[in-house]
Length: 532
Image 1: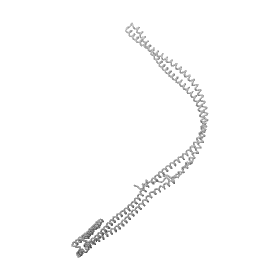
Image 2 (image 1 turned 180 degrees about the vertical axis):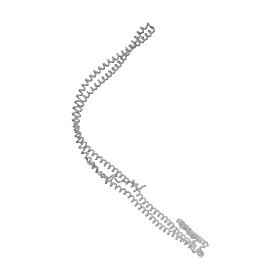
Image 3 (image 1 turned 90 degrees about the vertical axis):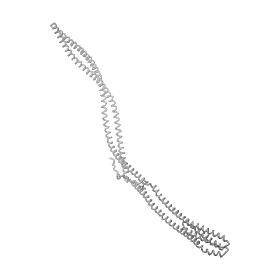
Image 4 (image 1 turned 45 degrees about the vertical axis):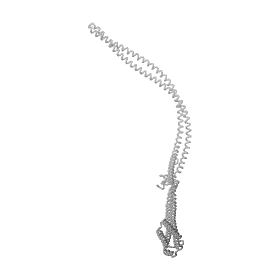
């Protein structure tokens, strides 16, 4: 994880958390040291209290032991109350053993050696037995018996007394050593706690100082870079490379500055391009206005010429109208003549049809004549055959039959020639009839064409009148165009002035954006030309 990408609030939180944890560690360490010291002190005090109780118990045993010894002496000195003091002796002996047993338990509780107590108990019990044995021959009413008993037990109480005193001294020594060790241990613990606390505090200060320095540097360095970038952008330099190496608030700020610089660079580039385009367009508009002015003047002169030409055209159109009226009259006459020609052709067609029918009838008649000649030839042939059979009697008949045959053949040949001539005439008549029919159709077409021409010429006459009216309107329109052309000339002058003003504004805008420097470009110099 890159700490530089952490947000500033998170880094401050981590630093605060570290300081808090360090303070908690110091507090917990101090509290733990104090608690540990208190626990050790409490334990030591408890041991010291137990040892003090053991000393008190041992001293109580000393008192009871002295009471026991005194009771034994009272037995010897007050024989009359021997039983009473004997009971007191036994009671004190039991209490001495009991107190020594309690002292032994207390010593064992704190881990102090109890061998001396065991030895003392043994010595005390042995001494108590010797005292009781010495009382066995004792006679309360005999002073000598008392002295004898006293002499037999003299000084046997010194060893238990010394041992009990040694127990007290031993316990007191253990108590003194315990208190001294407790003081030394407390001093050691305090020194160790001080060292630990000093180390924790020193570590916290060092790490905290380094963390604060790192945090300050991680904030101020990119912040100074952002300030420098903002100052660079404010000075008009948009070519600086902005590197964003973190995702914290400063990184977000740098990224926003980068996007802002890129957007400004794009806007400045577009403004520059737009300024150049406007300047070039204004130049083109100015040039166009000049051309338009010249063309407007040319148009005005052309309109004058057009007006003159339209006058001539008006006269020509009127003349065309008159000619069209005359042509319409002539076309009507031609149409009437064509109609009469068509009627004559129709009569010729009817006549040729009659001739064609008559020719066909003649052909039929000649066919009949040809058949008769053929039959006559056959009959003459038959007659010649019969005459040949008749011999001499039929010779004259044969000559007649031969003549008849020759006549029949000449008739058939003549009929054939007539038929051929008539067939040729019929064919020619059919051809003539067909040609006459075609001539009739042609005449019909001519009549229709003449009528169409007449109609067209009439329409031309009407159109000429309409055209004459249109030419009058054109003359009016040309006059209006002349007026509009003069207005256009005035507007062209105004447009030229506006184009020049726009070019001056483009120059001012170019000078305004020339202060910006874009990556890959130097400061953009104003290089726009004035109007030509």
